[in-house]
Image 1 (cartoon, chains in turn cyan, red):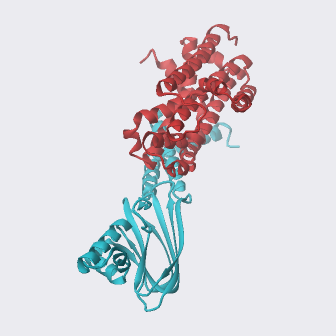
Image 2 (image 1 turned 180 degrees about the vertical axis):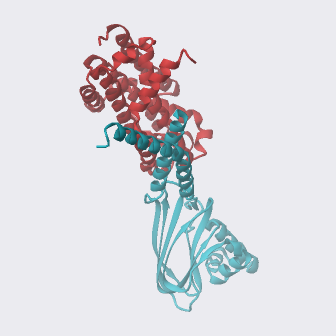
Image 3 (image 1 turned 180 degrees about the horizontal axis):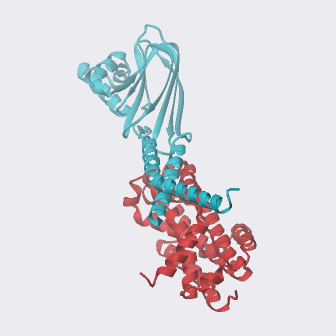
Length: 223
Length: 261
C-alpha cells in the first residue's frame, strides 16, 4: 500500500508539473527586437530587412524555435512580401555577383542600384526556390506571424512589381517565448504519465474510505 | 533494515503530516510555473557562456526560492512546532531512537524533501528552457543553486531554534518570517547608508548568492561595487554554509540536551 501511495503521489506531482508547464506555454512572448521603417519603393524594385548598409552595421535576423516573428507591411499600392530563409547579407552578395556577372562594365554604385531590381529577386528565387518560406498575395496590407522549428536566418523582402512607385511601412518584431514550441506535447506527456501513476492509488484510497464509512455506519447503528 | 524501522516510521509520519494531499502538488505546480515567469528577462540577455548560464539559473530559481522558503518555514513551524505544542513529540521520544535521529527524521521530511522537490523542478525547468546549459556549464549551475540555497537554509536553522525555544509553531513562524524580511531590509539599508563594500561583504557571508552575483556581473559590467574572484566566491559560500552548520548544530544540541517536554 505504501508503495502505491508513493507512486500515486509521484503521479499527482507529475500531473501538476505538466499542468504548470501547459499553463506556461500560454504566457505571452516577450519582445527582443522591434524594427519599423518607412520606405519609398520605385516601380519594379524590392527592399530587404534587415537592411544592409555596411557589413559592420548589419545584424542578422536569426530566429529559433523559441522565437515568434511578426511581420507587418502597409503600402500605398499593392506589393508582394516574402520571407526567405537566408541572411540578407547572403541575398545582397548573391544579387551583387549576379549583376556583376551579367554587366561587368558598370561601376559599384550602379551595381548597387541594379541589384535592387525585381529581375534580380526573381532570378534569386528561381535559382533558390527552397529559400522561400512564405510569399504573400499582392496586397496593400500584409500581416503574418511565424514560428520556427530550427535556428534559421531570415530576410523579409517586399517587392513592387507594378509600374507605379509606392510608399511602404515595414514593421517586424521578434518575440521570445517563455517555453519553446513543442513544450505543450511534453506537458501532455507529463499529465498523462501522472494520471496513469495516480489511478491505482486514487481507486484504493476511494475504496478504503468507502469501507471506512460503511464500518462507521454499521457500528453507529445505521443512524 | 529492522534497526532503521522506527526511523523510517517516524520519517513516513512526518511526510504524511508535512505533505498531506494537495500541499506537495500545489507547491510542485508553483515551483514549475514560478520558474518560467521571470525566465524571459534572462533569455533576453545578450550575454553568452557562463554569465548567461548563471543569469538563467538565477532567474529560474528566483520566484521558486521564495515559495521554497514558505514551504520550509511552514513544515518546520507546523511540523516540529505543533509536535512540541501538542506533546506528540513525547510519543516519538518513546521510540527506540536517539533524540538526534528524531530531529533528523523530522528535518529530512521538512527540509530534505522540500529541497529535493525544489531541485528536481529546477532541473526540469532548466531542461525545458535551455537543455544545453546543464551539460555545458554544470559547475556554474550547481554553484548558483548551492549559493542561492544557503540563505533559506540559514533562515530554516534560525526558525528551528525559535521553534525549539518557543515551543509554539505559529509564533515561531511569525518570528521566522520577520527575521527573513528584517535581514533583507537591513542588508539593503546598510549598503545604501554606508555606501561602502564592507556592508555588502558582510551580507555576502549570510547570503553568498550576492558574492556569486557580483562575480558574474563584474564580467559583463564595469560599474560594480565589488568584483570578487571565483576563489573568493567559494570562500563566501563555505563561510555561509559554516554559519548554517553552526545554527543547526546549536539546534541539535539544544534538542538533545536542553529541550524539556
